[in-house]
Length: 106
Image 1 (cartoon, one colour):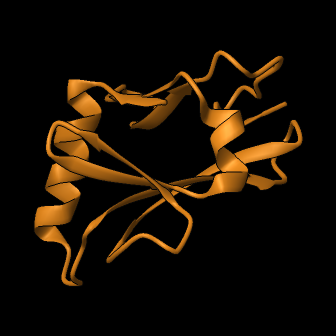
Image 2 (cartoon, rainbow, N blue to C red):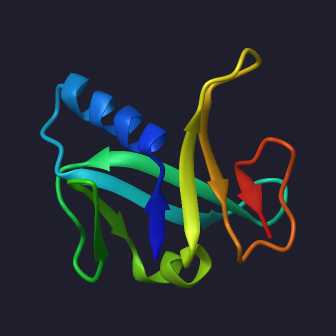
């Protein structure tokens, strides 16, 4: 369903190791909003919510709520380091349009 590049895995593991809160995995979800109708949201959480899909990627647990699953099928999450800005990027084959910041789609 969701794939993480090695760079994304390393960035997430680094965030987990420096977190001061108990962390069981990464929550990935879609919310209404952004430039194109939907936006990606991610964060470290202690445990999945009831009904979440749990995906394991290189020893990391990724939690996806059921409403977001259909929008994220086949998505690859990467972590890019660039001079202008660094951060997570999403390659989502379900998106028909993306905004220039890469954080929202339709």
